[in-house]
Length: 400
Image 1 (tube, helix red, strand yellow):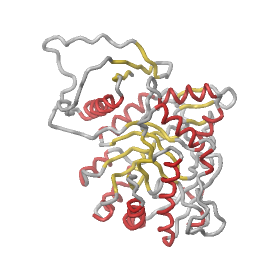
Image 2 (image 1 turned 90 degrees about the horizontal axis):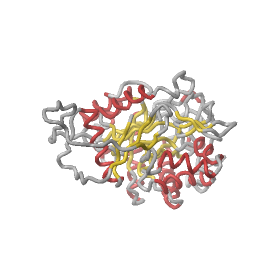
Image 3 (image 1 turned 135 degrees about the vertical axis):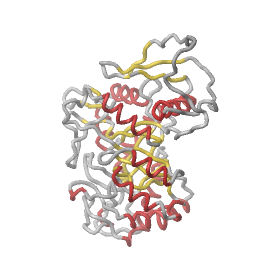
Image 4 (image 1 turned 120 degrees about the horizontal axis):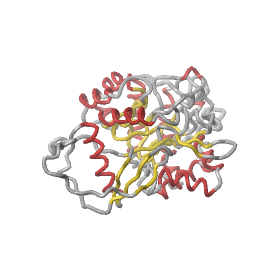
């Protein structure tokens, strides 16, 4: 598969987002785009599974009466494409940190540099996910700490924040969004980050937890542009990993009465996305968005693709066209026999995502080892790139 880009990245994103929607949906308004032609460069993903530059085709005007493959309707517009990327989990950043400096620079350049994939969206974790070297929150207190006196992001200073900053140096336009897998253990009924649900009495403290996180990350050089309430709101993962189940109403109450006002009062323009879970929960979202007080604070819906179908995003779009759709997680299974070669399957999957109004497509872990670790849960995901533990060799999965 090949891709073309322009020298100027902002013009490229504007054009490529339009082109992707035109190709996926059959029409796109090109007439109003500023298509200042500049020298084109071309890349190809071939049997090496590398995204590599090659000589640009020799373009020439089409012959007369050539049958049009794509017809453009300048009066029909679809979604603006925010970008594509993966998740900077603790596990991924840890593995990057263990590479030799030159190798680390090379793989990050391959993912974020101007001559590589040029990923433009990145997901980060508020505390630990299941793919982590240790389970932690940003307020590790043995006793309730509603004033958040023990709040600290020091864990992330070792290798997560340096990795995020390195990616930003390669792509200054990188759009970071975040999600928590669990509130601090002391906020929850089971007093554990693994499974369970949280006390409503800590909703105010938890909103301030988000504020402190966003400000601390910004002070560390990483601006987070959007956040969801919870990764996968509708499951506690049977207590096997960091997780927290949120009822439909609790998520609404938390956003409209606590998180939304807290961000506004702190003068933070961070967007709020709800759900951050599977397509099959589209009915929950439609019910939630019927609350106008919630919609005042919500920019859109974050979607995972493990259950249900992508047309769920269109159902929600048709009901609430002002709410954006974001495809925020779909990981490849490392035990799949075609883990490294199923690129055509992913091509079809992601085409379907774009056809259904998604503004971004984000995979899961940017990097894991050949066993799909570090991992504190039961998941079997592989990284977009694999860093082999013995040799430090880097290979790429079909999703790449």
